[in-house]
Length: 241
Image (cartoon, rainbow, N blue to C red; front, side, top):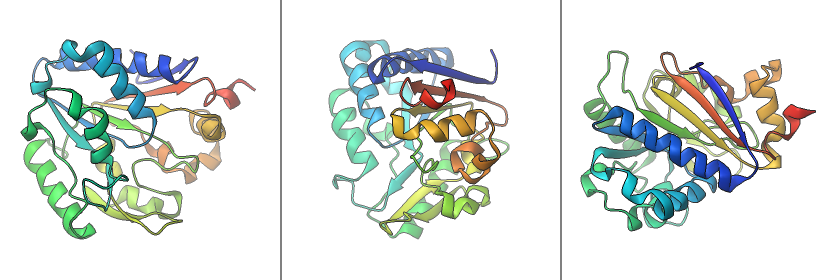
């Protein structure tokens, strides 16, 4: 299988269904503890819904450990919490052990949350070059950001730390994010991208346009792993022109 694979789907639902099958296959191939980092955003909600409705009994949830690629610095019950969204749309509907859920503690100070999470990654996911996820699920903003590394702070991608504190460029909200060091150390990274508002950035990144050097999402390139783009037809629109 080629290292990078681009998959285009007619709509969000078909994308979610395909990603469910991809996820299940990865978990089964691992045949043991499977460590996944999730993203926030609207597309994972559709994927979670598909998992619950159609595949809940296909996965040994006790083997899956959940982490996150980034988190807003808010309490877990806040409506903006990535963990809170996942709890509402996934964890509340499946039988997953509490000890398998490794959230970023957004209620701490940003620096404390980043430090605590980095220590947990080091302890739980040891690898010769740092923590290794079996799968990192990524989204992309219409500005080309991924995780919580934004274009105006793209230097954070190359920080030697495992986790950094980022600031949303418009709201000023603090976020904790994995750095490129961790993301590109994953066995598999997968973008889930939907919507016409992402189409231009998707095209520029996938086609290697020089302007894409300014987008953190373009820096995702697993060193020893695979990269998948799961894209709906609207997000792929500019690639076809």
